[in-house]
Image (cartoon, rainbow, N blue to C red):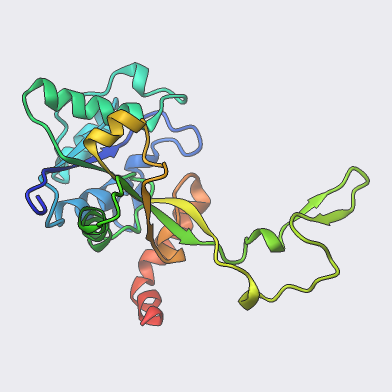
Length: 243
């Protein structure tokens, strides 16, 4: 709870990953991938409850082992490749509403973002609830660096490269370009009432929660797992360079 607001953390973790089978419980630097998110959430000062929404009994078993609650099994209709995250979140809220329990805020914590820290969970919640601008949600973003559109090209029908933005006549220096950010998966926080109304976390009343590039890695395949493990092994060095 923060400033009298009840807050639930929901970790969506369906089975049946095609890109990396068994991804959510696959070992990462000494513990299952999903455990990194559970551990960070359990240390939060503001979360009243941390639950897993899953359709997979193996994931449920691992989640319980690491201290997360699995109050229900997700319906198959919400565990397909085409199921939307917002429907999974609303299903969780509806489950508790049926039990007479309502939450003021919900934070979705994807297990594919294992580099998230507790400070990101609490920091994003605090920033949203403390804001005076009428914001209804906050989502994780990270600064676009090497992949900024001004450095991108397309390939023409004749096989030549063509600038995606601008032209070759103007040399672009990294320090001269405008800051640009991309959506990443560290945090998604919203007022529960606004989730029902807007059916999503992204809208005109959404704040940015900016994370450094190293935290923005999302695990979708084996290459991401290798990179995530390397970052975890060297996290102290990386964080030291930020100071």
